[in-house]
Length: 285
Image (tube, rainbow, N blue to C red; front, side):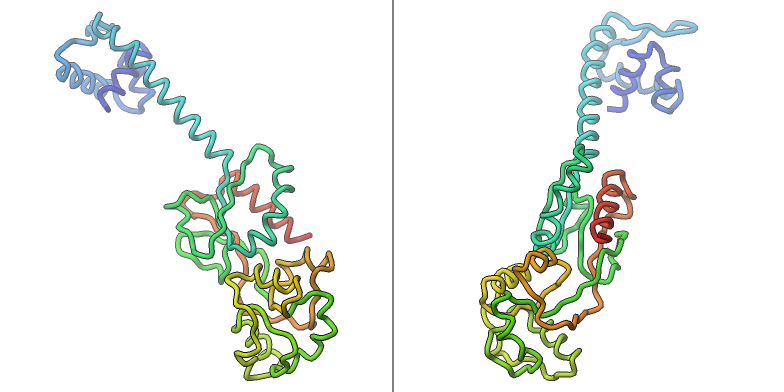
């Protein structure tokens, strides 16, 4: 391939010296590669004259198709680069992606119609470089090898329920209170009660249906099936619309936060920078 590339450049530019400048090598190296190719096919492709070279009839026949083939290859890679510049692949946790990010993406699209967002929702950590993702929104402490991270907002949780259950949920501060089932992660409930100085936390029989994700717990709470523990930040739209109410003013935290993370090796590309700045503006509202 090196020999064919050298021949194509020399045929297209008209000589070994201009080909060398384009390929960032020497005229002698271009001449060597062309000789290697001539030896392989058993035909001379250039006539070497004192101050210049010119294509032989065999070289002219090969040059037309070779130049056309390389032009097609260049066009293919240019199209690939254009697609990469305009396609943004994002991976996020299911609850954040479903409840917080997806409803906002229309605003990003309005600001950046040239960018197409491909959103992956997964509870598992993705290998961004290996799987071709531009960035992730992750929950943790912001320290991931090979990634740069920018903080969005803290991970906090508090009891939430449908408005119709608010009056019945007023005894919630007592971990033994059992009039309404609890929904959500038992460790978050234990941490919330611990913050209130109520240890141990709620017993196992306090919990209702076990669901696999926070947004499903909140959906059950909205339907009136119990009191869920969840993030008032992620579910601010439901709170603002009155589908949810906060049962108690206390917010508990686990020291974690949500972060924008992207591969350090790629740097901050224009599309990632645009998405990062938009996310930060959404958080600031």
